[in-house]
Every structure is written in structure tokens, then in C-alpha cells.
Length: 170
Image 1 (cartoon, rainbow, N blue to C red):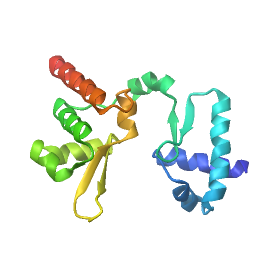
Image 2 (image 1 turned 30 degrees about the horizontal axis):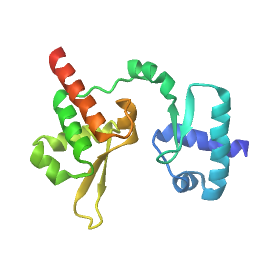
Image 3 (image 1 turned 45 degrees about the vertical axis):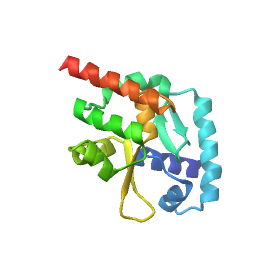
Image 4 (image 1 turned 90 degrees about the vertical axis):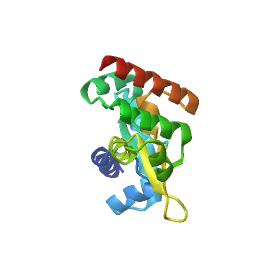
């Protein structure tokens, strides 16, 4: 079991994104129920270490730095967003899920902004059921980055504040 846990740990480290049990199983050629048993043990291992890393299982499984250490991560790897991109992110947070076509009507530079925000992991894009429209919504990394939980209005107010601070700093 230890070897499987080490292999799962390697997958989570290298991918640096949330993965389902099935996705991990595909990478390792292991059944999802076997992966689940090993990953639960691995989560307990991390919890007992009292270290800076953890495996989060909110939207799939991801190896991440505990929030207690996010200030260090932000110093080393800050996410820098221009005021224009922040305004686009604000619209997404307020109206999520929002169709990309609607976002472009509201924010003319939205295509460039969306690409930047997807790359930074702050939003995700998914085709809707008909397969023609693209819906956009914020991710858990968005909530984590702005240190906010749940309430979209609170998120929007924090974003507006950040936009103003960036404008004043420029």
C-alpha cells in the first residue's frame, strides 16, 4: 500500500490540479476503489505530519499548501492581475455561472481576460448541455486566493476593493 500511496502522491504533485479517483486510477492503472483506500490513508498521513502540505478533497484530490502558509506562497508566487482583468473577474463572480457570450457583451476584452484567468486557475470554462455555449464560473482557487468563502456578494465587494487599490497604486 505504501508504494501506491507514494505513486498517488507523485501524480498529485506533478499534475498540480484536482483529480478524481478515476483520473488518478487511469494514470496509475489502478481501480478507483483501490485508489480511494490508498488516498484516504495518504490524507491521514499528511494530517498526522503537522507539516505545511495537505491533500484537499473538495473538488477532487489535490496536493496543496495549507492555508496557514498561504502568505509564504503569495510572496513567492503572487498572482498578478490588472485592474481590467479584475473587473472581468468581478463580473464572473457576480453572475456565475455566466455564458461567455454574455460576458463578452459586458466586457469587450473578455476573451483575453478569460484565457488569463483560466491559466491562473481562478475560473473554469465548461460547455453547457447543448454543447454550443461555454459557461464560466469561479473555482475554489478563486475563493482561496481572495480568502473568502461562499457568499458571492462578499467576494464581489472584496474584488471591488482590490480593483480600487490597484488603480490607486498605479
